Length: 474
Image (cartoon, rainbow, N blue to C red; front, top):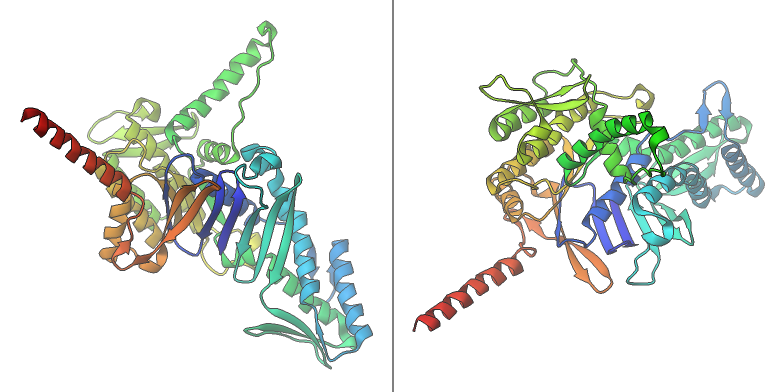
């Protein structure tokens, strides 16, 4: 699935190919990187959750619960019966049905998260250029846009990629071809046609869960500081409640974006699950992080709701707030992998078994994973990311680190990271906002366009200074 963002906040254009497993996003500050992945995260969080299915089908009793779908299916049947043509193209009818479904579910569910995270719709628009703001989703089955226009969010330009036709027949059946879907209609047995048509509707409205990952998590920048600050809020609010009568003015709760609040809620709500196998690949990777990077173990205290650090070869147990910035930053990643990703990776939701054909896929969004890390640790972390990708986890991360960039290239050279799994996106600043461009990648790695200018500037500055010193000494 490709997500295209246009004229959104500071972004002029950005395309993210989520069929890739490791997506590295580079670029200067204040150019739209975090805006882009926050928007994608909020979309995926809502489109892959259990959206309500309004249609119930039974081989004996056919019942269409939602009135709209009932009217739509009945309308298609009436249209086919009245025309009495051997072939009737119902692609537009199906597009209208799917569009209405997405309006009822996806749009209704993203209005609040987007307003909490980005502000009112008017503030989401690109201030540098007066063009339409929209996010386009291009999937295996269909293309549609989410438009932000005149204080309204709506579905537009929905196109189903295969032609859908109804053929008059004495028997009812459904055939999925490469370029078209054929549904055979027998007027004497309309219930069977309803079942075939209804299953096709469900095919389109559930294909997100069926064909793509179904869980996504967001790890924001300044993870340790956010976690410690938000952890203190509970105690602050408790004290304020006790002293309510002494307060002389209203105390406002600070605004927190939804990705950040999701991050805190996920970590503070960890439940230790003992069913995870010790040889689970995700757990093996977390153990490697602890051994090679942290030199200690990470655990979670369910009662105190705190992440704890146990340095190797000591009896110490430390709250991560008392540890180094490196330990506190990495500990949140370890906690996510051990207590959230690993259990999610091993479980299925029984209510979604009809659309899940394989193990749940997990997508991690990580902002600036290199923060507070020595270059050596940055390179080791890049290796960990590749191991996670090879274990089945998708990762999208933003970064300013040329060490992670170059290590990623080396891992491609070593064939530890397959070229087809990787994507590098570089944001460039223009007068119309940030423009993201995909960097070409081959078996030698990605072209280094992002860091050359800074490196050349630093090198030339050094040469000029040396020449100046030589001239002064002469």
